[in-house]
Length: 106
Image 1 (cartoon, helix red, strand yellow):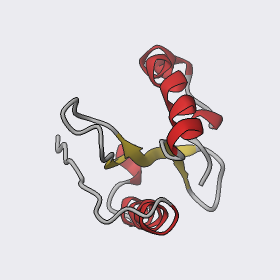
Image 2: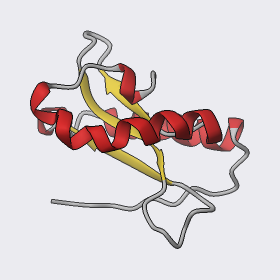
Image 3: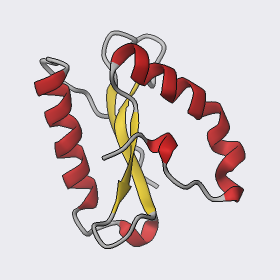
């Protein structure tokens, strides 16, 4: 996996992501985590992202696991594989004892 801000972002999504790019970069430097792109083995185009992120003001001690995939990339195991890698990273490299996850379905 590579940091999400290093991957191709379509022009129409740039404005949405601009507010995330700087915080992602500084979070990697400060806390050694953030968001990574999810790519297939066959190509280099991002199909989603995964990582650890602070979602709620009241929970700034522990980031939460996040996965987001393009609709065509769902139900193929990409999210599960990405979540496993992020959890391994959190437990093995960052010495987390637990990792909460929030779900948004829709």
